[in-house]
Length: 134
Image (cartoon, rainbow, N blue to C red; front, side, top):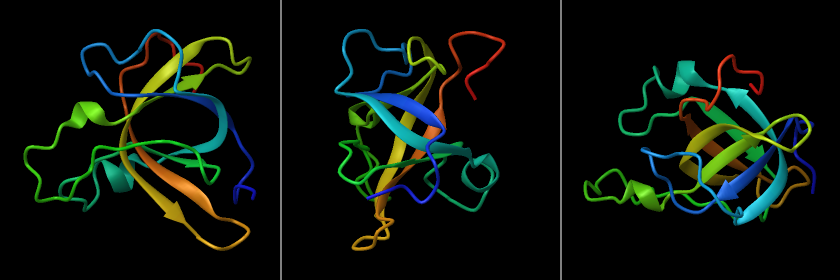
């Protein structure tokens, strides 16, 4: 099944998140996934969401193994480090550019030709400035 929009990024998915060192080393759990990334800070970071905050939304193909740490809004002891980190690659898919924390994952349009995974992301600070990957 196809994404509802043409892919504009390639990402690697790493297990766990570490805010102190958001650019993990080693091999990704899910490498080289094509997706569609769009900014969403107005609704996610500054909108009406009380508990969940995000800066971007990423659409991925159905079946992509991407994980969040969300376990209800009533879970104050949630371990946020078990969520995945998504790394945006450069246009040549050779360099890591921007890391994102996976806030929430949902399957959208289930059972249709446009079924896909919507991933709410919170951007970590990019590893280089100026930023040419977003």
